[in-house]
Length: 188
Image (cartoon, rainbow, N blue to C red):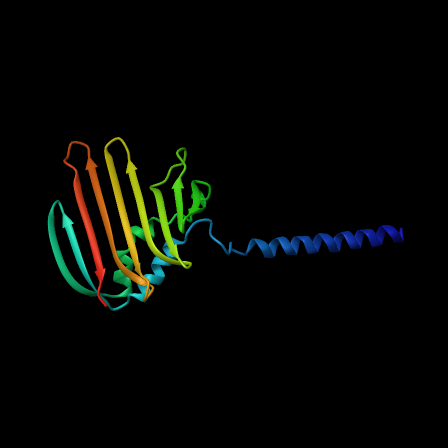
């Protein structure tokens, strides 16, 4: 009987320890994301560019408008919205992308059988620092088709965004395609 009591109390202690360990682990979030943290990267860049001057060029249906302005962090977040929305670190997309690294280029490509707006992301590095990001996105249904290409280039000296462009072509059934291109060049 004494042996059974020691066994039972030992088993109870072990079970309690295991449950406490499981509970503690379930509150932790993963430290490393499965894909490049595009959203986090863009949030840092928006903060770094607070109160920076930029030349913005927008072209809508061939008509170009150019302006020079100063943007706040909130303005930069809005300006970088295409990049932020292209982040693929969502639980529903964890197994949707093939990841390859070749010649300092990290590539996330959507598997053919997977569904996602972002088709491909390429991040180029030099000395473990991001120097460029390119995105290819598309979305299509019976009545609508949209294709977006976005590029972002870093200044190696400042480690801030140097220039970027976002071009979107949309085609709605029965209407002519519309084309919008936005380019930005940060001033020193």
